[in-house]
Structures are given as structure tokens and as C-alpha cells.
Image (cartoon, rainbow, N blue to C red; front, side):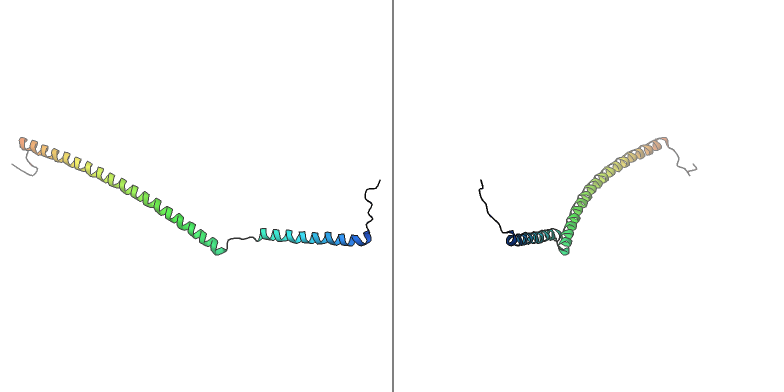
Length: 121
């Protein structure tokens, strides 16, 4: 039982098939090469575009640093003013205590009639 008995003349057909397979192989090789070339030499940022993006990034970093420094300066200035006010208050208290002590000493000296050094009375 033969379903389909086709006699193919291979002497005539084989060069055509070899040619078709060869052509497809060459086409596939060319397309694969183009694809790999695109991956290798694909769109990259040009030097100046990359340079500008780095400059923009540096400017942003500089602005952030300037803001941080300004905040730190403001914090330190407020802290310095607070410490100065505390210092002045304490100096006034010490001066007031010294003034009271000085008055007390002069009062005691006046009551005791202590002669001043250099008086030969």
C-alpha cells in the first residue's frame, strides 16, 4: 500500500535546495551580525551629553551642600547667641555679687575704722 509515490528528480532539485539553504544561512548570518552590531554600537549618550548630565548632578550636589551648610550655620549661630546670653547673665550675677560684697567690705571697714595701708596715723 503506497499512499503517495512521488519520484523526485534529485539531480535537478538538489542544487536548488542547496542554494535555498545557503541563501537562508547567509541571510540569517547577516541579520545576526547586524543585531550584534546594534548591541555593541547601540545608542549611547554622546560625550557632551554625559558631561552635561554630570555637571547638572554636580550643581545639584553643590546646592544640597550649600543648603546643609546654611542650616548648620543657622543652628550654630542660634546656639552661639544662646550661650552668649547665658554668659552675659552669669557675668551680671557675678558682678552684682561682687558689688554687694564690696559694699559689705566697705561697710565693715567703715565701722571698724581700719586704717588704709600707707596711713601713718
